[in-house]
Image (cartoon, rainbow, N blue to C red; front, side, top):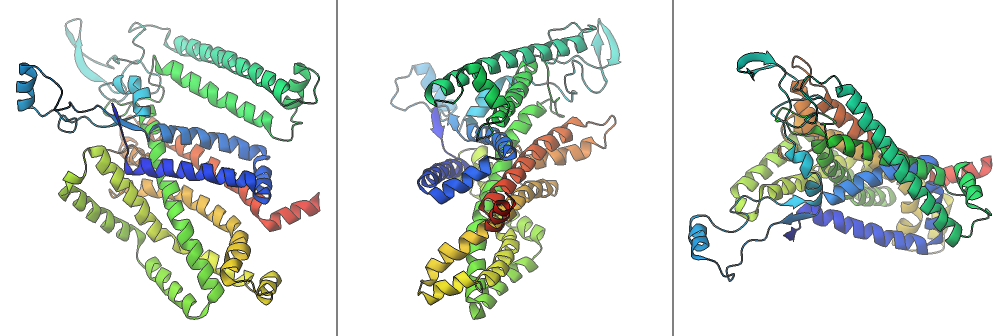
Length: 489
């Protein structure tokens, strides 16, 4: 096995390194440390941050790809293997071996448990009637699933009871695991952090009453909830399809978990491209005004005048033609899909930075007339220093909340683009592809509802967590909000 880095993989882990460097910088900068501490002392930000951390871990596990090594030409081989290699080439690419992520390897049991067609969540028979032989007679009935409920007999009345028993066992297991974790955490806290409590019981009561300076109670409850859901899904997935299967018999849970990386990449990469471009152009246009302002306004007004969908569709189709005509640049279909996803993010950023640029320009026009900016000019502070130290920091709360709202919008935009056929590659798992598939399923009889519901739940958790965390961070970094909170207290 050899590790293979895709374009998106490099970006994600480079971003992770940058976040680590920024965290070290925050710990060394008291004002930043104070602002971030204020943000994460709110229970809602801790809860939403833990949900986002879970999704981020899924995306990172899905961004470590491995591929079986090709046979070395210097490796001694038998005459039979040489003759076999002369007929079929040895490299993994020639054999059609696609790279697999760590998440793919962890979810291999789900991928192997494939049915013939649709099956409802936690079902043991197919969703639609089929004609097949039973005891030598042709019957039309719901076919038995190969995997779902295979441990039960066909006419077993204990299907619902079995699901309840598995759920109760998962609950008991989660309580046991979390109780052990809580005891270890209390022992470590009592020994190394020197709490004021004189016993473990007092320390536990102190934390559960919410008297700590940090929302530890919220973090523990959120950890318990996430672990409970994980253990329940893992336990039931060993016997049933928890979220059902799609038309090809593939687990919907597997597709949803694989779609998390696509959603985070589209939201994060596009936002990170937009932020510096819009912030730089908006601040320069608002501060210098005149001809510079008119030129920048002309540029983003021209781009805003072009219909986004047409520009994105034309660019994606041109990109697809280039990929198809230069297939030698890519060793696998996964690399082609990854390249299309990367450039789709860049195209979305190109067509979406104008709104933030206008907002930053208008706020800069107001800030440049305030007293502290005029005082800085009077004391001879250089223009770059004024822009970086006085204007940009007072714009970050607006930039942050706007970017997070766009982060949510980009996830939804991918669904719309996939609907019209110019989004991500059809072979790439994404919530947009799931919703596009559900469009036809909702018109079927009977209605196949679980694909749309699963995509909705995952997208809702991802978007609402990002929005709640952004609200907390904005309130912590906004000077006006901090001033009003200080007066109220």
